[in-house]
Image (cartoon, rainbow, N blue to C red):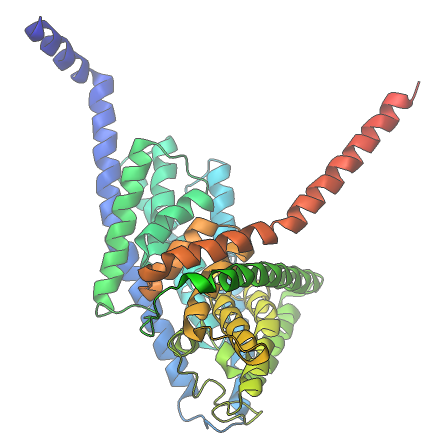
Length: 460
């Protein structure tokens, strides 16, 4: 009987369909590993290009301010990006994550070869010249295009090609944040990839290889290493829940100002006028708050490690080292008011950038602002750096509507696994608070639909 069963099993796995399935799996897994290497390398190259361009353009600036160069650079960066995308590339590539999601939903993941490099060049122009946004959207879009072209070269088509494209996007996120789990969750929460066994294996392979590749190329250094760790204590749990509430409310404001800014920019029909206007808005904000320049990870590192000295350098305000606690609180509050507008101007005015890094930056400032305010207004003793880390995940969860991805990107890029519990609590609270406007809008829409249905039913 055992021999017979073994023979039947052997025949079943030796059919043309079984051989094709095994061949497809092998091709998908091999492509996933190769994509991880390429995406991790691409993430490192993108970070390096942005760093050198921004350093070259800002070299010699006066730390005591004012720096009139900041009024020119963002305008030049966005205009040059529009020149590249409209006149040279002749293809719109802004909001890469949304475009990628739309292509996957429509079952059209055949991305042209030009997308394998163009988002990286455009993002370098946008951020290197002072755009206040991120680099994750462009690297995800470029990595997905690499996956599409690589998959077609290996003869992968249909659903398997869509899976490979999603793996490429996730690998790009994993590489740019050095966050393998965050990359996997990006493909699930944001792109909505179905979780089959093959999908999970391919995603893990691609994201793990990408994250490790970028980490090694960066000298085994995290983007925002968190060193000022204080042990989590249960008595501060109510404050963490309050921080989640605050971050959820702020996420509502962040998204609202972003949508309002995008609406005003969209009303400008001429693409060149729109680029100049958006660049001028970013430039005005940088002139007062140079901390908004680029992704702002240098500022994040200072805040989460309780070393905010120099955070207000290069500003026309001449704040020095932010002497005075209330000056620091007001400074952090001003950054919170501006960041959503600056990020949208950098993304929707002609620039090419990502939308997740700005939420992380805003969350860092929100946590810092909250802890300082509680400490000096009511005499609490909250660890400000710890709350800045927790705020990163909380604001991102509320603004992006992807709580799990936000939690793991935060702890992976800061090496703050010790704070996964408070990060998860605050992010969860923020996510549900930020969903309240969506819930209200859904109820109103449902009521309006029901009322219209009633009117039609009442007519003879």
